[in-house]
Amino acid sequence: MEIHAKHNLIRAFVKGGFLSPIDLLKIMELSRSLGNKYVSFGSRQDIMFPANGADESALAESFQAIQIDYELGSDQSTYQNIVSSYVAVNVVDSTRWLKEDTYNVLIDSFDYRPRLKINIVDPLQSLVPLFTGELNFIASREEHYWYLYIRDPRKANALECWPRLIFGQDIPRIARELEKLILGYHPFTTEELNLVLNNEKVRINYKPLTEKLKLSEIPFPYYEGLNAMLNNQYWLGLYWRNNQYDIDFMSAACRLCQEINIGKVNIIPWKAFVLKGIKASDRLRWEKLMGKYGINERHSSLELNWHLPVTDLEALDLKRFLVRELDQQDISTHGLTFTIKTHRDMVYFTSVVIEREKPAGALPGEFYTILYAHNFSPNHGVYHPYAQHVRRELIPALLIELSKVYFRQLNPEKEQQQAFVPETQPARTSTVYQCPHCLTVYDEQYGDATAGISPGISFEKLPASYHCHVCESPKKDFVAVLR
Image (cartoon, rainbow, N blue to C red):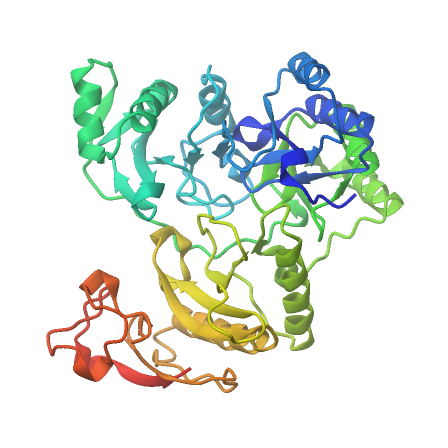
Protein backbone atom coordinates (compact mmCIF):
# COMPACT_ATOMS: atom_id res chain seq x y z
CA MET A 1 0.00 0.00 0.00
CA GLU A 2 1.46 3.34 -1.10
CA ILE A 3 -0.49 6.37 0.07
CA HIS A 4 -0.94 8.54 -3.02
CA ALA A 5 -4.13 10.58 -2.84
CA LYS A 6 -4.70 12.89 0.07
CA HIS A 7 -8.42 13.17 -0.66
CA ASN A 8 -8.72 9.40 -0.02
CA LEU A 9 -6.93 9.57 3.32
CA ILE A 10 -8.53 9.04 6.74
CA ARG A 11 -6.93 10.98 9.60
CA ALA A 12 -7.58 9.61 13.09
CA PHE A 13 -6.96 12.39 15.62
CA VAL A 14 -4.90 11.07 18.54
CA LYS A 15 -5.36 13.89 21.04
CA GLY A 16 -2.07 14.77 22.68
CA GLY A 17 -0.30 12.05 20.69
CA PHE A 18 -1.13 9.22 23.12
CA LEU A 19 -3.83 6.57 23.25
CA SER A 20 -4.44 3.20 24.87
CA PRO A 21 -3.24 0.00 23.17
CA ILE A 22 -6.84 -1.22 22.92
CA ASP A 23 -7.93 1.93 21.06
CA LEU A 24 -4.95 1.67 18.72
CA LEU A 25 -5.80 -1.98 18.12
CA LYS A 26 -9.33 -0.96 17.12
CA ILE A 27 -7.93 1.54 14.63
CA MET A 28 -5.72 -1.21 13.18
CA GLU A 29 -8.73 -3.48 12.81
CA LEU A 30 -10.72 -0.71 11.14
CA SER A 31 -7.92 -0.03 8.66
CA ARG A 32 -7.57 -3.76 7.96
CA SER A 33 -11.33 -4.02 7.30
CA LEU A 34 -10.87 -1.39 4.54
CA GLY A 35 -8.35 -3.61 2.77
CA ASN A 36 -5.18 -1.94 4.08
CA LYS A 37 -1.99 -3.66 5.19
CA TYR A 38 -0.34 -0.55 6.63
CA VAL A 39 -1.05 2.69 8.46
CA SER A 40 1.06 5.86 8.55
CA PHE A 41 1.71 8.51 11.20
CA GLY A 42 1.40 12.24 10.57
CA SER A 43 3.51 15.14 11.84
CA ARG A 44 0.66 16.24 14.11
CA GLN A 45 0.58 12.89 15.93
CA ASP A 46 -2.33 11.54 13.91
CA ILE A 47 -2.84 8.14 12.26
CA MET A 48 -3.56 7.97 8.52
CA PHE A 49 -4.71 5.28 6.14
CA PRO A 50 -6.63 5.11 2.82
CA ALA A 51 -10.42 5.08 2.95
CA ASN A 52 -10.62 2.85 -0.15
CA GLY A 53 -14.17 3.95 -0.90
CA ALA A 54 -15.47 3.30 2.64
CA ASP A 55 -19.09 4.12 3.33
CA GLU A 56 -18.99 7.43 5.23
CA SER A 57 -21.89 6.62 7.55
CA ALA A 58 -20.33 3.26 8.48
CA LEU A 59 -16.99 5.02 8.97
CA ALA A 60 -18.56 7.56 11.32
CA GLU A 61 -20.21 4.77 13.29
CA SER A 62 -16.92 2.86 13.64
CA PHE A 63 -15.03 5.88 14.97
CA GLN A 64 -17.87 6.83 17.29
CA ALA A 65 -17.68 3.34 18.80
CA ILE A 66 -14.02 3.86 19.75
CA GLN A 67 -14.61 7.53 20.71
CA ILE A 68 -11.86 8.91 18.49
CA ASP A 69 -12.39 11.84 16.14
CA TYR A 70 -11.44 11.50 12.50
CA GLU A 71 -11.59 13.33 9.20
CA LEU A 72 -11.71 12.16 5.62
CA GLY A 73 -8.72 13.90 4.05
CA SER A 74 -9.03 16.99 1.92
CA ASP A 75 -6.69 19.74 0.76
CA GLN A 76 -7.92 21.99 3.56
CA SER A 77 -8.63 20.18 6.82
CA THR A 78 -11.63 21.40 8.79
CA TYR A 79 -10.36 20.15 12.13
CA GLN A 80 -6.92 19.81 13.67
CA ASN A 81 -5.24 17.55 16.20
CA ILE A 82 -3.87 18.69 19.56
CA VAL A 83 -0.12 18.05 19.75
CA SER A 84 1.60 17.54 23.12
CA SER A 85 4.98 16.52 24.52
CA TYR A 86 3.47 13.84 26.79
CA VAL A 87 5.93 11.39 25.24
CA ALA A 88 8.90 13.37 26.63
CA VAL A 89 8.15 12.61 30.29
CA ASN A 90 10.78 10.15 31.61
CA VAL A 91 12.31 9.89 28.12
CA VAL A 92 14.21 13.19 27.75
CA ASP A 93 14.80 16.21 30.00
CA SER A 94 11.51 17.74 31.10
CA THR A 95 10.17 20.61 33.21
CA ARG A 96 10.01 19.26 36.76
CA TRP A 97 6.30 19.93 37.37
CA LEU A 98 5.13 18.45 34.06
CA LYS A 99 3.97 14.88 34.66
CA GLU A 100 2.00 12.46 32.52
CA ASP A 101 -1.08 13.13 34.66
CA THR A 102 -0.72 16.87 33.96
CA TYR A 103 -1.08 16.20 30.24
CA ASN A 104 -3.84 13.63 30.77
CA VAL A 105 -6.04 16.04 32.71
CA LEU A 106 -5.37 18.93 30.35
CA ILE A 107 -6.00 17.02 27.11
CA ASP A 108 -9.15 15.39 28.52
CA SER A 109 -10.50 18.87 29.35
CA PHE A 110 -10.91 19.72 25.65
CA ASP A 111 -14.60 19.08 25.04
CA TYR A 112 -14.69 20.42 21.48
CA ARG A 113 -12.93 19.70 18.17
CA PRO A 114 -10.36 22.43 17.48
CA ARG A 115 -10.17 24.02 14.07
CA LEU A 116 -6.90 25.72 14.94
CA LYS A 117 -3.68 23.76 15.42
CA ILE A 118 -2.91 23.61 19.15
CA ASN A 119 0.45 22.65 20.70
CA ILE A 120 0.87 21.94 24.43
CA VAL A 121 4.57 21.44 24.95
CA ASP A 122 7.53 21.49 27.31
CA PRO A 123 10.32 23.89 26.25
CA LEU A 124 13.06 21.72 27.78
CA GLN A 125 12.56 18.86 25.32
CA SER A 126 13.30 18.85 21.59
CA LEU A 127 11.43 15.71 20.53
CA VAL A 128 8.14 17.55 19.88
CA PRO A 129 8.28 20.96 18.10
CA LEU A 130 7.20 24.00 20.11
CA PHE A 131 5.72 26.42 17.59
CA THR A 132 4.06 24.44 14.79
CA GLY A 133 0.61 25.22 16.15
CA GLU A 134 -1.43 28.37 15.68
CA LEU A 135 -1.99 28.38 19.45
CA ASN A 136 1.21 27.25 21.20
CA PHE A 137 1.02 26.73 24.96
CA ILE A 138 4.56 26.44 26.34
CA ALA A 139 5.19 25.42 29.96
CA SER A 140 6.76 28.11 32.16
CA ARG A 141 8.87 27.67 35.28
CA GLU A 142 5.81 28.76 37.30
CA GLU A 143 4.04 25.55 38.26
CA HIS A 144 0.85 24.98 36.20
CA TYR A 145 1.27 28.23 34.24
CA TRP A 146 1.92 28.45 30.52
CA TYR A 147 3.13 30.92 27.94
CA LEU A 148 0.92 31.34 24.90
CA TYR A 149 2.44 32.09 21.49
CA ILE A 150 0.01 32.79 18.66
CA ARG A 151 1.17 32.12 15.10
CA ASP A 152 -0.68 33.88 12.30
CA PRO A 153 -0.27 32.19 8.87
CA ARG A 154 -1.51 35.42 7.24
CA LYS A 155 1.50 37.30 8.61
CA ALA A 156 4.28 35.03 7.34
CA ASN A 157 3.70 32.79 10.38
CA ALA A 158 4.90 35.49 12.76
CA LEU A 159 4.74 34.56 16.47
CA GLU A 160 3.33 36.87 19.11
CA CYS A 161 3.49 36.21 22.85
CA TRP A 162 0.35 36.60 24.99
CA PRO A 163 1.02 39.35 27.55
CA ARG A 164 0.39 37.11 30.58
CA LEU A 165 0.90 33.52 31.76
CA ILE A 166 -2.19 31.32 31.56
CA PHE A 167 -3.31 28.83 34.19
CA GLY A 168 -3.27 25.27 32.83
CA GLN A 169 -6.88 24.41 33.64
CA ASP A 170 -8.00 27.44 31.62
CA ILE A 171 -6.19 26.39 28.43
CA PRO A 172 -9.16 24.57 26.80
CA ARG A 173 -11.50 27.49 27.51
CA ILE A 174 -9.17 30.22 26.29
CA ALA A 175 -8.29 28.14 23.22
CA ARG A 176 -11.95 27.85 22.34
CA GLU A 177 -12.61 31.56 22.82
CA LEU A 178 -9.52 32.54 20.84
CA GLU A 179 -10.55 30.23 18.02
CA LYS A 180 -13.89 32.05 17.74
CA LEU A 181 -12.13 35.41 17.65
CA ILE A 182 -9.28 34.46 15.32
CA LEU A 183 -11.46 32.70 12.75
CA GLY A 184 -13.86 35.65 12.61
CA TYR A 185 -11.57 38.60 13.22
CA HIS A 186 -9.21 39.79 10.47
CA PRO A 187 -6.56 40.95 10.94
CA PHE A 188 -5.62 40.61 14.60
CA THR A 189 -2.79 41.25 17.03
CA THR A 190 -2.26 39.47 20.31
CA GLU A 191 -2.88 42.71 22.19
CA GLU A 192 -6.20 43.18 20.39
CA LEU A 193 -7.27 39.62 21.18
CA ASN A 194 -6.33 40.15 24.81
CA LEU A 195 -8.48 43.29 24.99
CA VAL A 196 -11.45 41.63 23.29
CA LEU A 197 -11.25 38.61 25.56
CA ASN A 198 -11.16 40.80 28.66
CA ASN A 199 -14.04 42.95 27.41
CA GLU A 200 -16.13 39.83 26.97
CA LYS A 201 -15.41 39.06 30.64
CA VAL A 202 -14.05 35.56 30.08
CA ARG A 203 -12.74 34.66 33.50
CA ILE A 204 -9.18 33.44 33.09
CA ASN A 205 -6.59 32.93 35.83
CA TYR A 206 -3.47 34.82 34.83
CA LYS A 207 -0.04 35.58 36.21
CA PRO A 208 2.16 38.46 35.03
CA LEU A 209 5.05 37.73 32.68
CA THR A 210 8.12 38.17 34.84
CA GLU A 211 10.65 36.64 32.42
CA LYS A 212 10.94 35.76 28.77
CA LEU A 213 10.64 32.17 27.65
CA LYS A 214 14.08 30.55 27.61
CA LEU A 215 14.48 28.18 24.70
CA SER A 216 16.50 25.02 25.21
CA GLU A 217 19.47 24.38 22.94
CA ILE A 218 19.47 20.63 23.63
CA PRO A 219 20.32 18.68 20.44
CA PHE A 220 17.66 16.55 18.82
CA PRO A 221 17.60 13.17 20.63
CA TYR A 222 18.01 9.68 19.22
CA TYR A 223 14.53 8.24 19.67
CA GLU A 224 14.79 4.61 18.48
CA GLY A 225 15.50 1.30 20.23
CA LEU A 226 15.20 0.04 23.81
CA ASN A 227 16.47 2.67 26.24
CA ALA A 228 16.71 2.77 30.02
CA MET A 229 14.27 4.73 32.21
CA LEU A 230 14.10 4.99 35.99
CA ASN A 231 13.08 2.08 38.24
CA ASN A 232 14.65 -0.61 36.03
CA GLN A 233 12.22 0.11 33.20
CA TYR A 234 12.72 0.86 29.51
CA TRP A 235 11.16 2.81 26.70
CA LEU A 236 11.05 1.53 23.12
CA GLY A 237 11.05 3.73 20.02
CA LEU A 238 10.26 2.21 16.61
CA TYR A 239 10.55 3.75 13.16
CA TRP A 240 9.86 2.62 9.58
CA ARG A 241 11.77 4.18 6.68
CA ASN A 242 8.73 4.57 4.45
CA ASN A 243 6.25 5.41 7.24
CA GLN A 244 4.21 2.30 6.43
CA TYR A 245 3.52 0.50 9.70
CA ASP A 246 2.52 -3.10 9.19
CA ILE A 247 -0.93 -3.71 10.70
CA ASP A 248 -0.09 -7.29 11.69
CA PHE A 249 2.92 -6.13 13.71
CA MET A 250 1.10 -3.14 15.20
CA SER A 251 -1.79 -5.39 16.27
CA ALA A 252 0.61 -7.86 17.88
CA ALA A 253 2.40 -5.01 19.66
CA CYS A 254 -0.93 -3.68 21.00
CA ARG A 255 -1.82 -7.12 22.37
CA LEU A 256 1.56 -7.45 24.04
CA CYS A 257 1.10 -4.00 25.61
CA GLN A 258 -2.19 -5.19 27.08
CA GLU A 259 -0.61 -8.37 28.45
CA ILE A 260 2.24 -6.56 30.23
CA ASN A 261 0.23 -3.47 31.31
CA ILE A 262 1.69 -0.79 29.05
CA GLY A 263 -0.96 1.90 29.39
CA LYS A 264 -0.21 4.24 26.47
CA VAL A 265 1.20 4.22 22.95
CA ASN A 266 2.86 7.52 22.03
CA ILE A 267 2.98 8.84 18.46
CA ILE A 268 5.69 11.40 17.76
CA PRO A 269 5.85 14.00 14.95
CA TRP A 270 8.78 12.15 13.34
CA LYS A 271 6.47 9.43 12.04
CA ALA A 272 7.41 6.95 14.73
CA PHE A 273 5.97 5.68 18.02
CA VAL A 274 7.25 5.19 21.56
CA LEU A 275 6.23 2.77 24.33
CA LYS A 276 7.15 3.63 27.93
CA GLY A 277 7.37 1.56 31.10
CA ILE A 278 8.63 -1.77 29.74
CA LYS A 279 9.88 -3.92 32.61
CA ALA A 280 13.35 -5.44 32.40
CA SER A 281 11.76 -8.88 32.64
CA ASP A 282 9.72 -8.15 29.46
CA ARG A 283 12.60 -6.97 27.27
CA LEU A 284 13.08 -10.40 25.74
CA ARG A 285 9.40 -10.59 24.73
CA TRP A 286 9.75 -7.36 22.74
CA GLU A 287 12.99 -8.50 21.15
CA LYS A 288 11.33 -11.76 20.06
CA LEU A 289 8.31 -9.89 18.68
CA MET A 290 10.50 -7.54 16.66
CA GLY A 291 12.57 -10.47 15.42
CA LYS A 292 9.45 -12.37 14.34
CA TYR A 293 8.34 -9.47 12.12
CA GLY A 294 11.83 -8.48 10.96
CA ILE A 295 11.76 -5.09 12.72
CA ASN A 296 15.02 -3.14 12.59
CA GLU A 297 15.67 -0.93 15.63
CA ARG A 298 19.14 0.25 14.71
CA HIS A 299 18.68 3.00 12.13
CA SER A 300 21.31 5.75 12.06
CA SER A 301 20.57 9.38 12.91
CA LEU A 302 20.88 10.03 9.16
CA GLU A 303 17.67 8.07 8.68
CA LEU A 304 15.67 9.20 11.71
CA ASN A 305 15.83 12.99 11.67
CA TRP A 306 13.72 13.90 8.63
CA HIS A 307 10.31 15.54 8.32
CA LEU A 308 8.38 14.79 5.12
CA PRO A 309 4.70 15.22 4.28
CA VAL A 310 2.97 11.85 4.50
CA THR A 311 1.78 11.71 0.89
CA ASP A 312 4.79 13.32 -0.78
CA LEU A 313 6.50 10.54 -2.74
CA GLU A 314 8.81 13.03 -4.46
CA ALA A 315 10.16 14.16 -1.09
CA LEU A 316 10.55 10.54 0.05
CA ASP A 317 12.54 9.72 -3.08
CA LEU A 318 14.87 12.70 -2.51
CA LYS A 319 15.32 11.73 1.14
CA ARG A 320 16.32 8.19 0.17
CA PHE A 321 18.88 9.57 -2.28
CA LEU A 322 20.34 11.97 0.29
CA VAL A 323 20.52 9.40 3.09
CA ARG A 324 22.24 6.92 0.78
CA GLU A 325 24.78 9.51 -0.39
CA LEU A 326 25.49 10.85 3.10
CA ASP A 327 25.85 7.34 4.51
CA GLN A 328 28.56 6.60 1.95
CA GLN A 329 30.53 9.56 3.32
CA ASP A 330 30.33 8.36 6.97
CA ILE A 331 29.11 11.82 7.93
CA SER A 332 27.50 12.57 11.30
CA THR A 333 24.30 14.59 11.44
CA HIS A 334 23.50 13.85 15.09
CA GLY A 335 21.55 16.80 16.51
CA LEU A 336 20.54 18.12 13.09
CA THR A 337 17.08 17.68 11.62
CA PHE A 338 15.93 18.07 8.01
CA THR A 339 12.81 19.03 6.07
CA ILE A 340 12.18 18.50 2.38
CA LYS A 341 9.64 20.85 0.84
CA THR A 342 8.52 20.20 -2.73
CA HIS A 343 5.17 21.81 -3.46
CA ARG A 344 3.16 22.33 -0.27
CA ASP A 345 3.27 25.12 2.26
CA MET A 346 4.38 23.98 5.70
CA VAL A 347 5.64 25.35 9.01
CA TYR A 348 9.29 24.40 9.36
CA PHE A 349 10.41 22.73 12.57
CA THR A 350 13.81 21.39 11.58
CA SER A 351 17.30 22.87 11.63
CA VAL A 352 17.87 22.45 7.85
CA VAL A 353 15.37 22.84 5.01
CA ILE A 354 15.78 21.61 1.42
CA GLU A 355 13.22 23.48 -0.63
CA ARG A 356 12.47 22.79 -4.27
CA GLU A 357 12.54 26.01 -6.28
CA LYS A 358 9.68 26.91 -8.58
CA PRO A 359 10.57 26.56 -12.26
CA ALA A 360 11.89 29.81 -13.70
CA GLY A 361 12.84 30.68 -17.27
CA ALA A 362 14.03 28.06 -19.69
CA LEU A 363 16.59 26.36 -17.42
CA PRO A 364 16.06 22.59 -17.55
CA GLY A 365 16.05 20.31 -14.49
CA GLU A 366 15.18 20.69 -10.82
CA PHE A 367 16.88 23.18 -8.51
CA TYR A 368 16.77 23.54 -4.74
CA THR A 369 17.45 26.14 -2.05
CA ILE A 370 19.10 25.01 1.20
CA LEU A 371 18.14 26.96 4.33
CA TYR A 372 19.31 26.60 7.91
CA ALA A 373 17.72 27.80 11.15
CA HIS A 374 19.34 30.58 13.14
CA ASN A 375 21.91 28.89 15.42
CA PHE A 376 20.53 25.68 13.89
CA SER A 377 17.60 25.92 16.34
CA PRO A 378 14.17 25.81 14.62
CA ASN A 379 12.56 27.29 17.72
CA HIS A 380 13.77 30.76 16.70
CA GLY A 381 11.67 30.61 13.54
CA VAL A 382 14.37 32.43 11.53
CA TYR A 383 15.95 30.73 8.51
CA HIS A 384 18.94 31.86 6.46
CA PRO A 385 19.77 30.81 2.90
CA TYR A 386 22.91 28.69 2.68
CA ALA A 387 22.89 27.83 -1.02
CA GLN A 388 20.50 28.58 -3.86
CA HIS A 389 19.82 27.18 -7.31
CA VAL A 390 21.43 23.84 -6.38
CA ARG A 391 21.07 20.74 -8.50
CA ARG A 392 19.93 17.54 -6.79
CA GLU A 393 23.27 15.75 -7.17
CA LEU A 394 25.13 18.58 -5.38
CA ILE A 395 22.88 18.67 -2.28
CA PRO A 396 24.81 15.94 -0.34
CA ALA A 397 28.13 17.81 -0.59
CA LEU A 398 26.53 21.01 0.65
CA LEU A 399 24.79 19.22 3.54
CA ILE A 400 28.14 17.76 4.57
CA GLU A 401 29.70 21.22 4.66
CA LEU A 402 26.71 22.68 6.47
CA SER A 403 26.96 19.93 9.10
CA LYS A 404 30.59 20.97 9.67
CA VAL A 405 29.44 24.54 10.27
CA TYR A 406 26.93 23.19 12.81
CA PHE A 407 29.53 21.22 14.75
CA ARG A 408 31.97 24.15 14.71
CA GLN A 409 29.39 26.48 16.25
CA LEU A 410 28.78 23.95 19.04
CA ASN A 411 32.33 24.63 20.29
CA PRO A 412 33.07 28.29 19.53
CA GLU A 413 35.75 28.44 22.24
CA LYS A 414 37.73 25.71 20.47
CA GLU A 415 37.37 26.86 16.89
CA GLN A 416 36.60 30.42 15.84
CA GLN A 417 33.47 30.75 13.74
CA GLN A 418 34.33 31.74 10.18
CA ALA A 419 32.44 32.43 7.00
CA PHE A 420 32.53 29.22 5.02
CA VAL A 421 33.40 28.57 1.37
CA PRO A 422 32.13 25.18 0.19
CA GLU A 423 34.72 22.88 -1.33
CA THR A 424 32.20 21.68 -3.88
CA GLN A 425 30.51 24.50 -5.77
CA PRO A 426 27.13 24.38 -7.51
CA ALA A 427 27.21 24.37 -11.27
CA ARG A 428 26.55 28.13 -11.33
CA THR A 429 28.53 30.19 -8.80
CA SER A 430 28.01 33.73 -7.57
CA THR A 431 29.31 35.95 -4.83
CA VAL A 432 27.20 36.66 -1.76
CA TYR A 433 28.13 38.41 1.47
CA GLN A 434 27.89 36.64 4.80
CA CYS A 435 27.87 37.85 8.39
CA PRO A 436 30.67 35.89 10.14
CA HIS A 437 28.93 36.11 13.52
CA CYS A 438 25.53 34.52 12.78
CA LEU A 439 26.06 33.30 9.16
CA THR A 440 23.25 35.47 7.75
CA VAL A 441 23.69 35.88 3.98
CA TYR A 442 23.02 38.96 1.82
CA ASP A 443 22.33 37.94 -1.79
CA GLU A 444 21.57 40.75 -4.22
CA GLN A 445 19.27 38.37 -6.13
CA TYR A 446 16.89 38.50 -3.15
CA GLY A 447 17.79 41.75 -1.40
CA ASP A 448 16.79 42.13 2.25
CA ALA A 449 13.07 42.61 2.76
CA THR A 450 13.55 43.14 6.52
CA ALA A 451 15.75 46.19 5.82
CA GLY A 452 13.64 47.41 2.91
CA ILE A 453 16.31 46.48 0.33
CA SER A 454 14.81 45.46 -3.02
CA PRO A 455 16.17 42.54 -5.08
CA GLY A 456 18.92 43.52 -7.51
CA ILE A 457 20.80 45.92 -5.20
CA SER A 458 24.47 44.90 -5.05
CA PHE A 459 26.20 44.70 -1.69
CA GLU A 460 28.58 47.50 -2.71
CA LYS A 461 25.66 49.88 -3.24
CA LEU A 462 24.16 49.28 0.20
CA PRO A 463 24.45 52.29 2.54
CA ALA A 464 27.25 52.29 5.10
CA SER A 465 24.56 52.14 7.80
CA TYR A 466 23.39 48.71 6.57
CA HIS A 467 23.65 46.03 9.25
CA CYS A 468 22.79 42.38 9.77
CA HIS A 469 19.07 42.13 10.54
CA VAL A 470 19.68 39.15 12.87
CA CYS A 471 22.66 40.16 15.05
CA GLU A 472 23.04 43.83 13.94
CA SER A 473 26.68 43.45 12.93
CA PRO A 474 27.77 46.36 10.67
CA LYS A 475 28.20 46.11 6.91
CA LYS A 476 31.99 46.24 7.19
CA ASP A 477 32.03 42.88 9.01
CA PHE A 478 30.44 40.98 6.10
CA VAL A 479 32.77 38.85 3.98
CA ALA A 480 32.46 37.69 0.37
CA VAL A 481 31.58 34.02 -0.09
CA LEU A 482 31.33 32.06 -3.34
CA ARG A 483 28.12 30.10 -3.90
